[in-house]
Image (cartoon, rainbow, N blue to C red; front, top):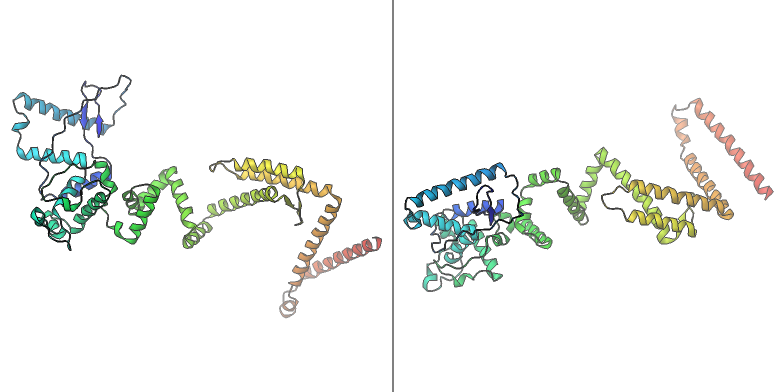
Length: 423
């Protein structure tokens, strides 16, 4: 219930609000569904509640629509006062108007329960026995829908909502109810926990969405509504960072078990230049963080030439310090700069450790030389001389480069032979 206060008046005006937009739409649907069904006539009137305005309350500037609504209520009150002054009380109102007011009060307090009760006490789905006494007058959902001027599916949605609530002990079972019986109904805000106006809820897809919603602790109707309106979901993601973050987390969780979605996302990223750059940057930062983490966790370093050796204590301590700073970063903070600083610092310490260890320094240079020699050998072996002879691709520059290479190789061989003789 929402109580709207008009600062200029001494007495507050109480206005009943049905609630969320979904509840309002259900009200329209329910009224249309059961327009021809006998309404509840034994509802007590609700006395208006007067709320004393706290001294510290400061009214905020009302919205234009709120001002108009408040004015409409005030105009209605003034008209009421005028009628009362003429001697027309509640007892003299048209009975039809009184019944409509009572029915409105029932729905304002109970929401769809008021109409679900009509279904629960009057409908006997096919396959069930007719029963005895007053229960024999119950009709099938199809007959009830025909009388109401709506579809049997709509009637059964109300029936199923009541059935689930009865299983939870919130309302009586169908067998206890007879046509015309009145009971105390649950509050309106509980209705949406049991009722769904969507046929998709009964499909395999709808059941999966319902199960996921219950696992997340939210009403299935909310999730079903979002699933049936992807354009609204897109608009919310584009406009609201919080919604975008929730969508990102959900997609990542989904991709862990959906290879097809992984492929689609990878393809979309690969086709977008900005995303490719962002992914490359993040991958580089992740590799650098992994390099530092490997030193901390394994106690080993990888030299520039590719050797794996034990990390000095000083180097390992420095790596631990940088890694702790990286782990303290929030998800929203940019890790690239911090990762680069950690990587460069640790790399410098690795190079220093290699130079300060004579045996390691010699082995590092030997490994580096072998690596370069292997690469050069592989490249030369890939040259296809047969194509040179068969096709007219020869140029003078090629021969000059090969002659220079031959000279460099000769110099290298002489140096190695000299070093061998000396040693």
